[in-house]
Length: 103
Image (cartoon, one colour):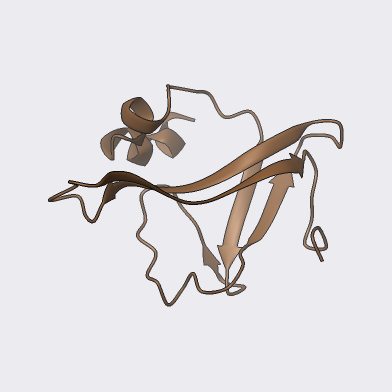
C-alpha cells in the first residue's frame, strides 16, 4: 500500500493535512466518465466542471465515509502562500456504493 500513499507524502498532504494512515477500503473517483482521480495527479478546471462519480468498494452499508477534495499548496507548489484550500466535502457516504448511488 505504500505506493498508493507515496504521492501524498511527497506532496506533504500526509503530515501537513492528514496524519499517516493505512487505507482499509478501496474507492474510485471519476470525472466525465473517463478521468480517474489519482493521488498526486493534477486535474485541470475543464475536467472538474461536472459532479464526479464516486464508488466505494468493500465496506458495508453500516459504515459511512467522508470524502474531501482539497488542494494543499494553493496557488501552486512553487509558491503555496495560501496553503490548503478546501474545494468541497461530502459526508455520510455508505460503505458500499456503485454507479447508481446518488442518482
